[in-house]
Length: 85
Image 1 (cartoon, rainbow, N blue to C red):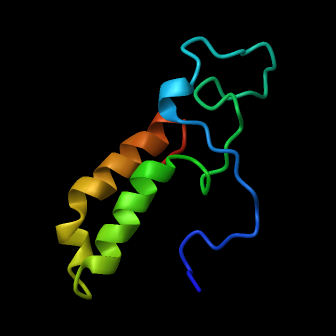
Image 2 (image 1 turned 120 degrees about the vertical axis):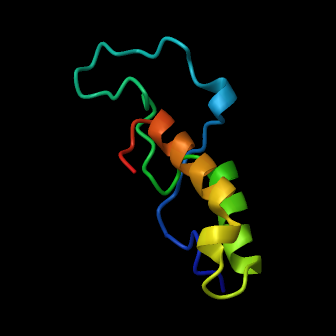
């Protein structure tokens, strides 16, 4: 049983490389940085996985220091979709 990513909601994952450079912003409710409407739990699976793996392999209390590179990469990816982190 995994607690990480155990949400019952399904996620449609779109790799960053396949995001359109000019998203359809004709709908005023569409975030131009996240035109697919991804939820935070579904965005950036690559950086999320690396961050989570680092935390799992770190000693208790050391994840914040040992995994800083992965944390910052995931935050940058999330900001790229317009999430405020």
